[in-house]
Image 1 (cartoon, rainbow, N blue to C red):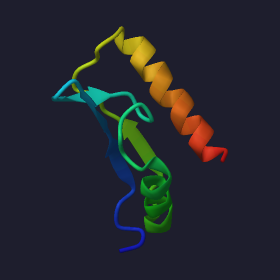
Image 2: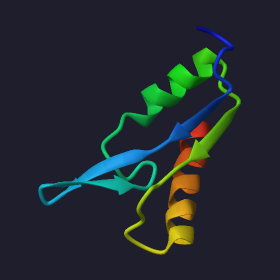
Image 3: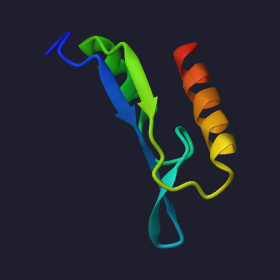
Image 4: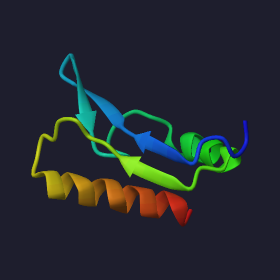
Length: 75
């Protein structure tokens, strides 16, 4: 459904021990190249990183997610 979804919230998840935890984008187990490709095909214009719980300083978590997304966007 092209051009129907202009904004998406991005989250990543990881397994630590036997627990599912929120992770910075690119630090978890999601297939980000495929996710971002699907977003591009759909016409997404804005990406919002949402991390409900940070296991480190929230600004450090944001920087990690930003760097991962920038690297993925620049291929």
